[in-house]
Length: 447
Ligand SMILES: Cc1cc2nc3c(=O)[nH]c(=O)nc-3n(C[C@H](O)[C@H](O)[C@H](O)COP(=O)(O)OP(=O)(O)OC[C@H]3O[C@@H](n4cnc5c(N)ncnc54)[C@H](O)[C@@H]3O)c2cc1C
Image 1 (cartoon, rainbow, N blue to C red):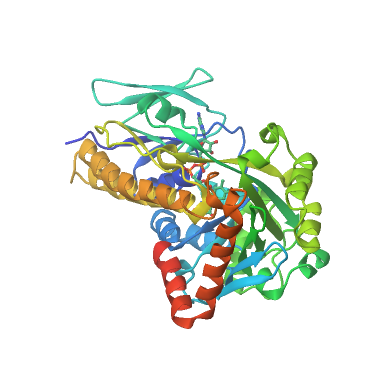
Image 2: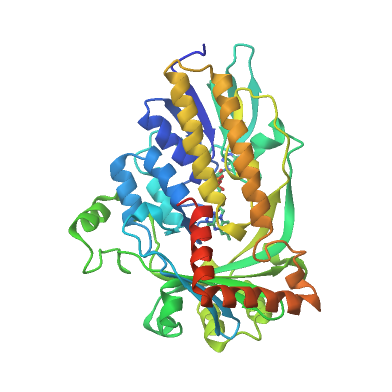
């Protein structure tokens, strides 16, 4: 049997790493998290992430109950429609989503910064900032030591790589596991929600997730993010007493500058962008987005022009190349560190959360003396590799996140675009097809 009590080292205080840390702490397992960012507000955290029922269940399993309720209270209003629009804002399709009473059976819209602050709550003593992992060493007694750029080190029984797409742990542990460029680039921007910007959107768009299939092979996605607090950070009138006191008691809002906004992401094949796009930020990027969307409706272009310049960032979309299973050891991986996926199906963070919950269950069994550590890691990896790389493959096939998608080709692109729009249009108009589409959306997303 393994040495217990266990001590787990987690590299990366992102979505998956922090969920795991909460889950271990809740189970009484010793954990330490090492994060390269210098403070809890550093990093690219502006854009929206959709937390689906799988992700919600994992958070419910790992977070202390009150913090899980705080997570729910700090989500934006859930989308009521899934819309498909043309670049001229013509409605191709609109699928009403389920006005479900149970908040864990619908998609939650979350601000990345808010989620980070929620996940950091209560683990301040466990997370070590300004610790850039450089390499590790495995010892004959089964322990593992992580080394950091500042010359310090930490030793534990298991090292968990939760350090994202460019994982330094993966580079050392599985050098053959590579991440490749998916061939598309996103420009993400946040637009403050004001009376003017709100007036540029129809009711369905304002209350939904809207996918824009633009003629000429430029795609977009638009979400309106409305929270329970106002510009000053005070709880809005009309919010229930329990939620209001939950938000007021939550210290994370002090670090979170998230306010009501519109998230607008524009993307296309990488060849449509200038070579230096990844070095640009702010207004020069907005100009590129405006150039790509010359044929878009004036309201969408006005939204782009209204973006907060500090929020406009380029994202090069990446995808992991699947790897064969490897012999398990005192090092393992979760989330983007092993299965980076394109945003096509919106499940990267959710899969990282699923990993965290699964690994936690395995480590709880070790701590209880029911399994040796290596067997638990092997069981976790077998399952995680199966669903993780399945999600990578699905995501790459969806919505033009693959730069070679026919939608981007000069002539057949027009036909591919018409076919995609035709599919959504027919599906949304024929009741049995519409029901099937929404059922599949929920089934895939883990309801
Ligand atoms: C445009 C876009 C939209 C998306 N939308 C969705 C969505 O709607 N739903 C969804 O489920 N997913 C979405 N995703 C995917 C999602 O963002 C990722 O899959 C998820 O954040 C991965 O979580 P993680 O914990 O594996 O890694 P991350 O959250 O990236 O965390 C990794 C952490 O490790 C730290 N780190 C890195 N290197 C080191 C080091 N050497 N030493 C110490 N720390 C280190 C980083 O600073 C970071 O804090 C989207 C992605 C993109 C690009």
